[in-house]
Amino acid sequence: MTWLGVFFAPTAWAENDNTTRLSVTIDGQPLDGDVVLDSSAATRLVVGVENLGGSALEVDAVRLSGTVFGITFFGYDTRVRTTVPARGAATWTVDLDLRGLTRRVSGSLPVRVEIRDTDLTMVAAENGRADVHGSLFSAYGLFGLGLFALAGLLLAMGLLPGRRHGRPAAPWRRGLRLVPAGCVAGLFAVLALSAMGLTAPSTPTDLAITLSTTLIAFGIGCALPERAPVTPADNNAGR
Image 1 (cartoon, rainbow, N blue to C red):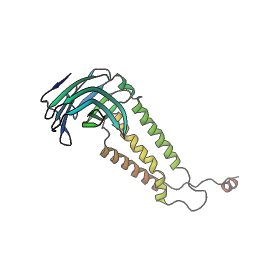
Image 2: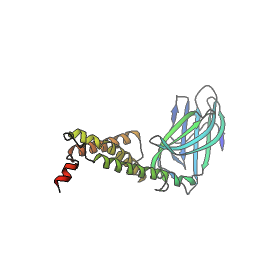
Image 3: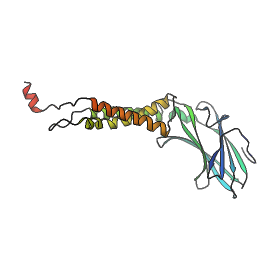
Image 4: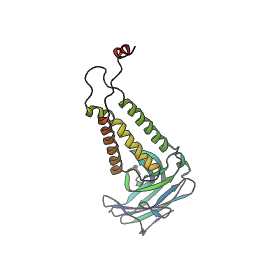
């Protein structure tokens, strides 16, 4: 349902170039509050836009999406095709079918609601966090398991003996061998905390966790003794 007029609602405003204001609620909760996306229940999205500019605003679609590490794990688009007059406002109430969400993501993650014009250019957007009740074996969960396996592989490669000839590597060189594993382990930790609903991924959180695990891995690599490779001469000496 769509109507024009002044939109009053106790929700947060998102501004775009000071000409458009956007307000969003999901099942009556503001997007920056305790929002829950449940694939087993109907979800009502209410979007209000106020056009503060001097010209009419052509709105083509409303989009709800969830993106982590620049990867969009789900996105739902609804065509509204409405012209918002200058100094006017409009509101859309959309019932979303989230039954496919179970196979896509589960946990706490950032979500974004935006309105787009006829060229699919974003006009205004509101960011928030939502708890998604999906499956741990969703694409999001499998992506985390892939990072876990990659971190283990990089760790094993970093612990392999160094060069067969020459002097043992310096401690800082041994530490650098484990840096890739520490970096990937940090990304996995971000997804694990998200899947458990403890925290939603965000740029400051992602950087802090990834940097911490990378430094820890570097320190462990520096502290580990150099493993001497087994050479043919060593094998002959042991006979």
